[in-house]
Each structure stands twice: as structure tokens, then as C-alpha cells.
Length: 111
Image 1 (cartoon, rainbow, N blue to C red):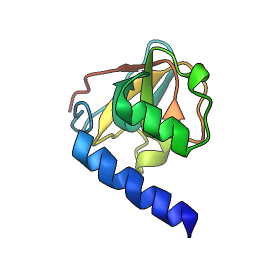
Image 2: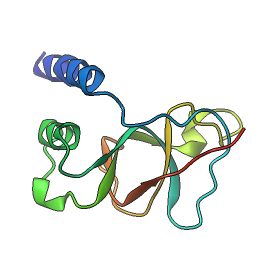
Image 3: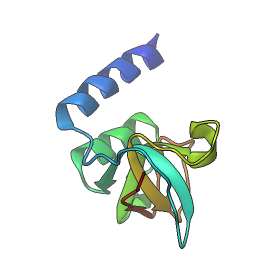
């Protein structure tokens, strides 16, 4: 029950803050790191990143640079494995079950 309440609160705050940019649909090509499709890409000290880390039990000292919020590897997204309708990113750091992924760079994707 507590997990459901935390999830509902997180979703409400995430909707109120916004996603920090949209990606559109298309292919993701990463020169370094792994292609991720994230709901948001934020600075590590943004309210959304801090709240997500706290709700996920992630040590705030681990957050540096730009982080992806609620990410899935591109291969999980669709049948073709390359389509992302949210914010595409190339991420080189640790992933905390996709809740937060470290070392991300947002990328523009083309159709």
C-alpha cells in the first residue's frame, strides 16, 4: 500500500514539473553509452531527480551530472528495438532499475 501511495505521489509531481524535453519518435544512435528511452532527462540537483532518488532509496551522493528518469533500454521499447516516443538519451553510468540512470546525455532523434 505504501508503494502505491509513493508511486501516485511521484506521478503527480512528475506531471506538475514536466519532463524536461521531448524526443519524438525515431532512431537513437549513441557513440558512447547505451541508448535509453527516458520519461525525462534532468540535472542531478533538479527537484524531480532528487525526489525520484529519495523515493527509490538512492543515495543522493551518487547523483552527478545529468540523469535519466524512468528509463528503459531502447531494445525493450518496441518490436524494432529502436523507437522512443519520449526523451532519448545515451547513458554511460549505473542504472538503478531504470528509475534513475546516471551519466546521460539527451539526444535528438530522427524519423
